[in-house]
Structures are given as structure tokens and as C-alpha cells.
Length: 175
Length: 175
DNA sequence: AATAGATAATACATTTATGAAATAAAAAGT
DNA sequence: ACTTTTTATTTCATAAATGTATTATCTATT
Image (cartoon, rainbow over all chains, first blue to last red; front, side, top):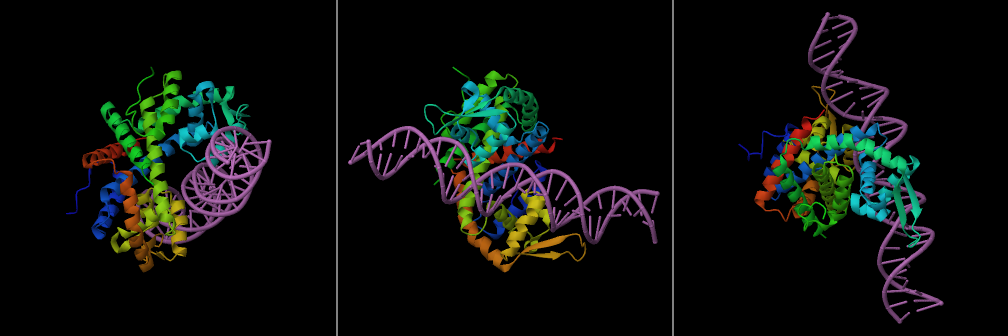
């Protein structure tokens, strides 16, 4: 038998990837099967999260990135952030923030105003329509998001939270 | 004081997101802060993984998705899979697999052949050049991938593996 | 106060990814 | 045998994301 797959009973849709990575590890000894598997698992979970969120958001005229921007604005003082702060909060690249804000602006969900103190900065603010939209959308998306993690109990969620932050901490130390 | 952030010392780059989500939870009681946070953390870790991998892959003429395709082929019998099997192994959409294979074919790293038994199917196979390329690339990418998880010990890696699979299991049960 | 360097945001070209439709072949049902 | 349905892949139009360059403004240094 080949090396046992961790938690073999779980997550059938990951089985094909498991099988391929197991064989790669066999053929290429330096292959670090566990960390590569973790990378693929993370990628897969992230895809599932955004796919499910997008489905719930589509008929609200949003996708998961536009939604992320609006949530971050909603959770900010005066419902206002600069594009740079949106980059920091969403981890999207600045060019993507510009593009997404262009779209939200077209929909009338945000406004843009040059900062009067530092004129390099732009203040992006949720409009009344934007606040209305996000509060309409939130219940749906929150439910969908929760469903992704429905099988984890409270302790497991906290553990996952901790482990993911520890990974990020490691990533921050990478060149 | 607002509710304490889990593992507050860890992962500075997630602090802005934490702050926004905390305030959103305050303003919108139905907001499930912990699961939404988990979703953002997962998204962020996945971004970091692909960004770091892409940097290591760029001067090998690959990106992380093309690399994923080649690894899955490398770990397959006769180093051959159909596009559908590549979809199952990589979790990329079929149209994307077609596009990526077009590129790998242009580079001479794979071959495509119509299956003689079931003529709907296409057998995608790693060429000699493809095998050479992937074995050149693997050490670099494996090192980079490992570095992402450098701060986790063995038990934590197994725990993360288990939790991610449990999330996937939950996602599989979603409509 | 003039200049050099850093920061902020956007524009543009290109790459990457997707949904939906089209094409083709096999399998299932009649 | 014939029709319907399902499966497999690709095509095409579009969306989403990125890297790099550009413009503008601020900060620090001389």
C-alpha cells in the first residue's frame, strides 16, 4: 500500500489530487507531500468560498471582491477608506481596487473625493444606496459563508483561525 | 474595549481586515464575524501561496496553474490524464484547462492525442521536455511552498490538513 | 526654496479565468 | 435501429486580475 492519506474518508472531491500528489512524492523524493497538499487544499477551499459567494452575489450585481470592498467600507469610520487602505484591508492589488471602485461608482454605491488635506489621497465612501445594498446583501452572503464552515464546531473554527494566522505570519517572513 | 481579536499578536498584515470586520459585526448583529474572518483568512493565505509560487515559477516560463497541471500529469500513470481528469485534480474550470494546455503544448511540454477507444476523450501527456522541465522546477517550488508553512510544526500541519478537508466536506454538501 | 525621494492613485497593456454555447461522440432508452 | 440524454472538450465573448508605467502630490534633505 502507498502512504495513507490523512483523513481519507473526508472530502471526496479532493481524492484525485491526493492520488496524484502521492505518486509524485513517490517519484520525486524531495517532494514535500504534506506542505504541497496543504497548498492545494487551501487553494481549493478558497475557490469554493469565492464560487459560493459569487453565486449568492450575482443577482445583487456584485462579485466577491466588490462585496469585500463594500464590507470593509461598511466597517469603517464614516464608511470611508482610501484606495490604499482598501488594498490593506482586502489584499487586492491597487490596480484591481481602482477597477472595482470604478464599477461600484458606476452603480452609485460609492463616492470618490480627493482628500482636502493630502491631495494624493482619495476618500472612497459608501453612499446611501451603497449602504442599502450591502445591508440587503449581507444576510445572504453571511449565510452562505457560514455554510462553508458548517461542519466545524466552535473549537475547530478557532483552531483553524489560529493556524491560518500562523501561516500568514510565516508568509510575512518570506522574501 | 471591542471583542478581542483571536491571536492578536499574529499576522500583522491581517490587522486592517480584523478591524473592519470587528466594526461590521458591531454595526450588523447578524454578521457572523468568525466565519467571515475565516473566509478572509483563507482567501489571503491562498493569495500568498500563489503569489510566492508564481514568483518562483516565472523564470521557468510557468505560472502556478500550469505548474499544477504538470505536477498532476507527473503524478499519473504514463504521465497522462484527460482534460476532465485535470479538472478533477486541479479544480480548475474546463475552459481554463484547455487554455493552459494550449500554452503548455506551445511550449512543447505536453502532447495531446484523441483517445482511440472513446473518441470524445483527449489524452494529455507530459513530453520528455515536460518531464525535464517539471523536475527542474520542482525543487524551487517545493522549497517556496514549504516556507509558507515553516512556522507550523508537524502536528499543526496535520491539524490544518484535517480542518481544511472538513471544510471541503461541508462545501460538498452545499447546494 | 529647490531638489530628490517617497507615496498615492490611476491608466494601459496583457494575462488569467469564467460562463455559455457549440461540436462531437458515447450511452441509455424506446 | 432510432432518438434522447449524457459526457467530453473546445470556442468565443467577456470578466477579473496583474505588472508596469505615469501623473500628481507630499516629505525630507540640502
